[in-house]
Image (tube, rainbow, N blue to C red; front, top):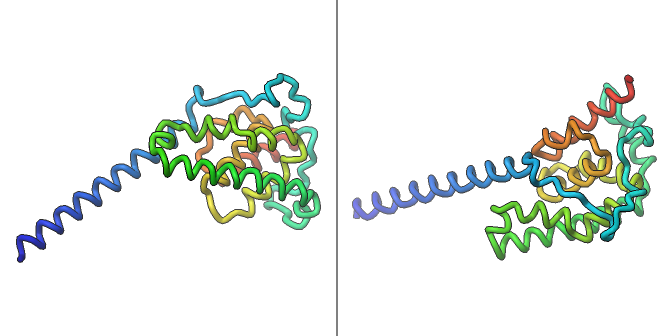
Length: 193
């Protein structure tokens, strides 16, 4: 009986080590993929190169909500169009759910960073990007207010990053909250110039 219990205990420990190893490898791959240059894809508006709605920087947008002392939430809420916020959240939650389903069906989709290209090529992501400036503050609010840092928030950060085109911030974040911190610092430093 003792041998049987020891054998089960050893098997459980080995399985735990394997699971931890797999999770560690997945996180390393995920982190590497988000930082690699070869995963920067151009999002093109419905197959054309007319990007009139895409913002090249935030100089066209006033960011009075972001200060050295933090974010003025009341002012941020006042400056958000709720219809745009609802549209963006519906589109990107739908996209996030699609990706989760694809990952369940095919682990290679996740491990090969298929989710990243899928996001950039998706109708939902492109629709948000095509909203241009109207999408920027709602995306910011979603990331700012979320208690999570999952795929939905990450996709929102990808869209906001694409819209504001902060080249020096794009490759240096791995979570949505990290992106938000860098975004805030960039807005504050741009204001000081």
